[in-house]
Image (cartoon, rainbow, N blue to C red; front, side):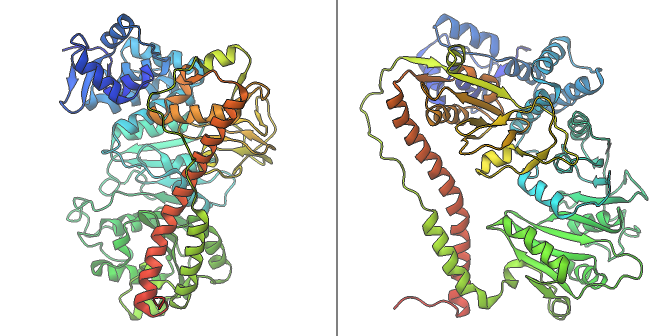
Amino acid sequence: MSHDPTLNAGDIARLAGVGRAAVSNWRRRHDDFPAPIGGTANQPLFSLPQVEDWLRRYGKSYQVSLADRAWQRLKAAGDLRLGEVVAQAGALLTTGESELEPESASLVSELAERHGALTAYEFLVERYLEAHSRQLSVTRDDVAELMVRLVPPGEDVPRVLDPACGVGTLLLAAGDARVLGQELSETSAAIATARLRLRGAETTIVAGDAMRHDGFPGDRADAVLCDPPFNERAWGYEELVGDPRWEYGLPPRGEPELAWVQHCLTHVRPGGLVAILMPPAAASRKAGRRIRANLLRAGALRAVIALPGADLWLLRRPAAGERPPSDVLILDASADMSVVEPAWRAYLADGSGQAVRIIDLLADEVDMTPARHQRRDDVGRAFAEARDRFLAAAAAPPDLKVLDEPLDQPATTIGDLIKEGLVSVFQAPPRMAADGGDVPVLTADDVAGDAPPSGLTTAQKGLVAVEPGDVVASYSSVRVMAGGGMVLGPHLTLYRVDARRLDADFLAGFLRAAGSRATTGSSRFDVRRTRLPRLPLKDQRAYGEAFRQLAVLEDALRETSALGQTLIRLGLDGLTGGHLHPQS
């Protein structure tokens, strides 16, 4: 069996700067194309050295970056051990000790020296998560950050717990905190530990089954964040019938999420908050009615908020002698998460907004499904507003001429443009001080969402100021900046063009195209190999305008997709509830 680093067809296409169809053609047309050495008939794996040799013999341009070489070396361990070797790479970067074989250890160390340990490891983790996307469930970054903002611990150096922490996504969003976590998988626990320690966080991650073997018995954090496994039937019902955590009732066998809710409440101090993601059905299932009612009566359950794909429950551990509230916030934010924070703040201040009387819920089925509690008198107005926003968000594609044959244009690379002085590249520092800062920081999420800077830092050495016309790129997004007054955040790269000779939108378009062909996280390491035509500035600007229109169209499609779902739901509710009527 070969122990060479391996690539799939997509990897080969990315390294050679071609589409997957080109790789398929090479395999069909060339008898000497390397034969698969592993994988399956539908997903074959090829030897990296053999592919390199074939590309050289046929004069194909390609580039295997240091990052890709390190990743392919780790992948050679095989799928079953991939998580283990990624965890070992984290141990090497955090403690200097690892069981990695020497070549892998050398490549990982060199990658860390060149790009910083944190950036290097995040690249490897991104690739690992992508390779195992069907087996690993990872909380969306925007949802994780929302959860953290909704349950501020309120301490100088708070203690934040995630009892089902996976690879650490929620704890990473917690910022400057002492973080505690538990994870069933030893591999994921080790990866989470390395990710957090590389950020300088005081970290304690325990491997084990939190339901059966609580890693923090009697310990209470200032806040708890949790994205537990959904619909896990073998959660320990038989062994845990008399467990003291079931303060609000024994969770039914088919309601493991209600076990996680009570586990989280057990581990937060009185007055502390819990944010936990739940399956939408948990708000209404008959089997969980008694526990939901007890949570409401005690004042522990404060909000049920529908988000894309899941509900978010916000809970507060009641303090001794505290009078429970009379209302609970029930909100449908599945189409627009920006409404969550204002509604939550308003509810905490005076119980206003989308609050529902608890006595009404207890008198009914204790059904807290957010869509059910949409205010009926608002449906017609909400439909009209959503329709207007949907129509306003629509955008037309650019008018592009279709050619019978592709243009044969002289080409260059971004690396050559950098050498010629047309492009300057700046990298954000991997870590930034955040305490008491007032300098706006552009984050990767801001770039992805075309949003203003959401981070803050203090003035410090190494910050990269963003100027109008700069092209900023993350692992997966590219944006031409309209304004300045901010600094570049971690994991971002800035490309500053000589505007007299190079159009920023022209460059950004080719960067985005290269990123769409690449796998997640690879573009920052291979970007100098990106090819683009040599054109006069006038022609560049024509391309740049077309690229800009495509970017506008992409943003519009993202917005109209969410608005369209809202429009359909409101239309159905309005027509069936009598608040809307067909035009005669």
